Length: 418
Image 1 (cartoon, rainbow, N blue to C red):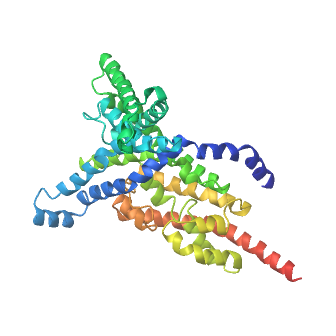
Image 2: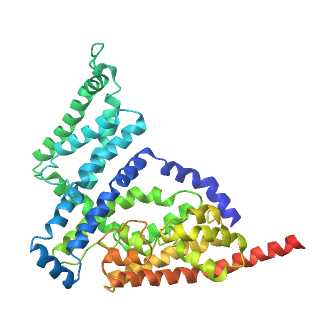
Image 3: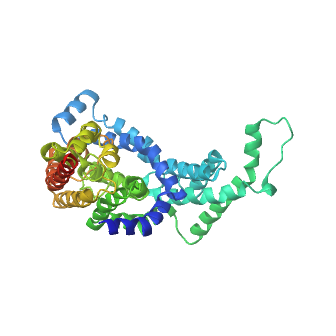
């Protein structure tokens, strides 16, 4: 194990760290972080509208009439309905901020460029998400380079307010950037493409989401996050740009199918991972906490950390375990830390694909306690039961390794006393 760790630290960690600190990925991750409350609210609105409890539906209709679902529809329109507009602004804003250039200007120009491509017709919702990401990155790269060109700056007389001077300094860069996207829109239209967003969704985004919805993708997500965490890299943050790129469109497509009375098409999304795999945090560490209480009570160092980690762990915060136990570079815990989420994602994926558990269509807050999150995400007691089964599996996997660590600790204590 020591040789493996040394090899990874020498040949893998430096490259992984560079990827984790890559400015474009950070800009995308931070953009989705800002929009997370909106996605949670929009998903909850759909849950309320489509809660599969006849008594609740009849009660709401008796009070508000047949139009009571208008509340949820309005909330959806203000969240998921314009999600791509937010992302176009925030990605450009964050990337320009990283370059130390006018972030507000970049964000505004990005939104203008996004609509120049035809977003007013379609694409403001999650169907235009991939184009919004591309536009945000492209605008930030073009605009930040142009805005630093002295030949494009309009010099204002002394005494002009700074805000006015800044806006005029960005005038030509903004005009050139937006004009470039207008040219792209004209070229695409010349090839007979009436709706760029619909065409891109059908040709690129939908096939990519289908690929990301496979068991192999779910297994990779369950593996890579704890694997990176083991070496001290924040695995969740590193794969978050990928997860969010498939998450919002998947939730939106599931919600649309649910509203139409159809089967939700996408199993793999963020609520699926959060509710059935990341219980207690990366590595299903709520299972480790319980395992320590069951078979590790004679391991005093583990118990001290475990008592501190138990309360945060209920709300899926596991940094006390990561760095206090620690799980990072812990050779004993490497195997269960990697295996447990892959086993849990396997049971969850096939239980869902076989129809035993409904597809996750609602995104509860990530701090929602285990089992409750499974119930809310699927709007079904079967989801809560599946989460409970995965929790038991996690405890059983961790127990032998906790016992091994406890025996080793007891040997150290006896050796020190001798």
